[in-house]
Image (tube, rainbow, N blue to C red):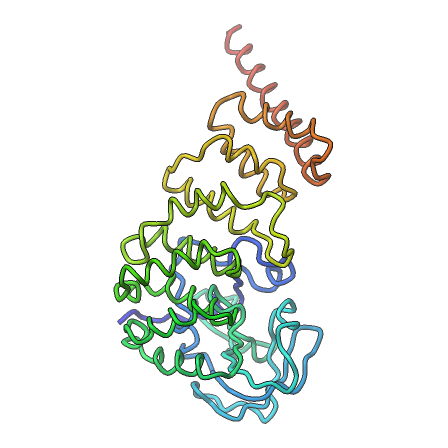
Length: 354
């Protein structure tokens, strides 16, 4: 049995998923270092300091809080008040509705600033648990989430084929929160992957490749498959190459599905495992309006050859259709490259005279 730590829960309470889900949320919930093992969503929801309740949502506060009337306590040692005020990321407020029933996992604790492994009561009160796969742990109260919670209540259950079947069913559905939960569980519960068949792995690959799948779900599963190819499938290389090759550089027509995080993750896993990306594929992303992605691509182009990066930047700057944010970044980047080259020349001349 894997030991739980209070620090793991404190990470979850304040950490949204991936590179840049939303700036507003990331200011409140900081991502943990990738080197640390992330506990799976169900491990966190069934943590010693967690509480899971089901009840009707009766109020939405625009400052980032919801009020639930808990009718059932599904997990936890603390009995909630008749009206439970829970802090959630502001960006999730539009996804909940007054009068509907929800299942919510929350904690009343936060990390002790004086003790990295200790916990203290949170002055903000109840905070919905947030971590990859639960952003936040707020689900419509439906048979599917009830079945997943029942199957995943124990460590044995979280590694079972029964839970795998329920999560695979969620991947076939259209509930974004359940899709995300399933992705997080497969990504961060390694033993669960051992229960998968080739057909199951094919479904996970299909989920990653499907443009209709929420970006964060595709991102989590792609990164997980690169780490766990024996259990999730060794399809990730081709999928990552196809993603950076075929995804429109100006994004999808649905602006709510910005693919930047997915593209960055694809480049990261390809680079991490030394998978070569064709220069033409790298070049196309220099026209993207996101400076962080353009910078990442410029670094990869630099490795292709001394002149590759400058040449592509100059081509992009010559294009009148180049997004203004990208134009500004590339002009600044080019000046930085000039300063680097100048320093190198000065060092070379200095060593030559000596």
